[in-house]
Length: 509
Ligand SMILES: Cc1cc2nc3c(=O)[nH]c(=O)nc-3n(C[C@H](O)[C@H](O)[C@H](O)COP(=O)(O)OP(=O)(O)OC[C@H]3O[C@@H](n4cnc5c(N)ncnc54)[C@H](O)[C@@H]3O)c2cc1C
Image (tube, rainbow, N blue to C red; front, side, top):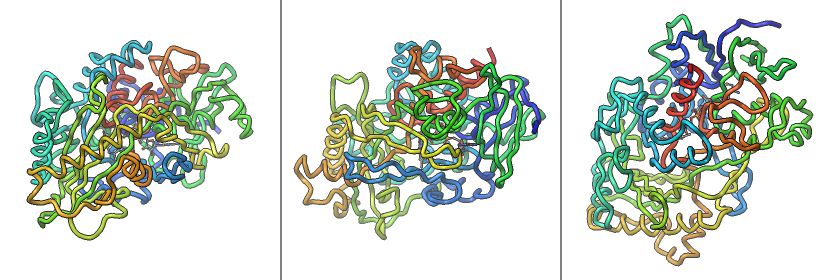
């Protein structure tokens, strides 16, 4: 079977993949973009209406993954939504636009990754951006494909949260993506005129008619094919159970996300040799780091009833309010992040009671726990084994415990007096450190930020080099959150988009 030949095949039309495809097409290349999910038009109304994103959970637009039982979290198997449609997780996410801190990227560079320092990443952030929000021009871009805006109709309770945080000693910050991330304010959002601006809407829709771009949806890539010299020559994919094939003249770019990129590499013969042999897969390259170094952020919530009767606006991204502060003053940047929701947000929203509430999620920004992604079988359409090993490093629990205490303090401040009802989570009877820790173990869940499973670096166990080329083979790069050596100190959509920008520049060099 032979297939059509393209210069590049980009696997996965998510946050990063859409950027890579768009930029390569602009550079004059012939590109096929292969996405396992359905066209986003099929769920247009829900995807584009910001406040409705939780309705996408456990639908056909969600890979609906579950972790292995997590020993430090009462053996729970945690639900992990991942976007499965054009736009990937940027079509399903909470639209918060947050870059992390300069230290994150200077640290990546200090780990031996040339071209990934803060200056280079700031350039990439700005290139993508069409900023129409409140902030310092020096740090923002204009005229890029991705609209970044202020919330058009923030909830009064979110504004009260900012006042409450200030009451508790945090500084007010109107631009957490500007000179400093520290303090409390409202998030910027990837929205255009109050509608979601996904990576697909920003980068792909405007060039759909371009002769250099072919987009295939419901196309699940099952194999990267290599020749005898270990050079990638194309990919196979399935649509409705039927196998199709494309060939590439230049490269395959893997942008399938932090769970599926390592899985597809392993199913194609690139990964830890022993693990591949266990599943009867022929080893193309022994790459022990594939699937290792999994990092993610956890959310631990305090939740209150609200006594007012104002629901969030349809343009609400739910996670409206931002806060960044220190538990450990010796850290290079804030180690604790707050997300304020003018709603209940319990178990991804599945366990929300009737009525109105507010929630403050605490997140440790630079967790030390490391997990892994592995194969359950050689079948690329099976779910991968996901084991984040949450809270396996002791400091991770401490920061979340302190976060709960600080969040409670903010929630009980005067600025929230007029709307605060009963404390639902953790509840009045949870007071000691041990009780709070138990609340974290029993209720915390992912902030949806898995990264690091195809780590970039200059050592033998790094999966890709600093130009994102997969070691041990030719003609394959990875461009998505899986290449991040360490998790950024914030949300991961903007960094994923910047990885896409950096990848395309490197390919074009
Ligand atoms: C519910 C939720 C809320 C979030 N909220 C925020 C937020 O508010 N702000 C923020 O910054 N971050 C947020 N995130 C995280 C952020 O969206 C992700 O980090 C980011 O989108 C990841 O980008 P990516 O390119 O690595 O992967 P993805 O965007 O997940 O893209 C991977 C793509 O590859 C496709 N794919 C996978 N396997 C295959 C295959 N074999 N063949 C073909 N296609 C394949 C997938 O369907 C998907 O489209 C959230 C994530 C989720 C799930």
